[in-house]
Image (tube, rainbow, N blue to C red):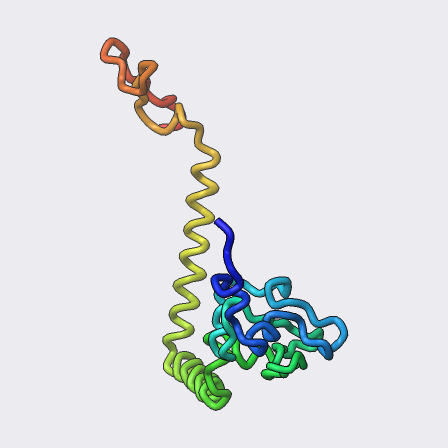
Length: 173
């Protein structure tokens, strides 16, 4: 089926809408389309939604990180830096909150060591590490046949009822 000029969706758009789909004529050197910028799909959609760009509108990023679109006359329109639109959660937390958290952490450490709880915790952690190392060393030295009675197993891993468990060597018991 052939379309008439009135049926073609591209021909029904205004010149302003068609202009927004192409790269601006005065885009800064090195500007590349946002789809080729290395940003993930979710971030690209977040940026396009924030600046009011449609799915077919041309959106680019300059080498210094500014978001560029094409205005109705074919010129570049700067929407600001990409970081203004693509912040992670940590970047959205005000700096004074980070300062407050740092102060709270320092106070917590002071209280921890001033009360002796920190020292007790460190002593217990050290003692636990020594016990783990000692037990590991002993287990490495003991051979499996000397660890206690061992039943012979069948091919499927179940104990063989016809075999008698072997006892460890008397010298080690």
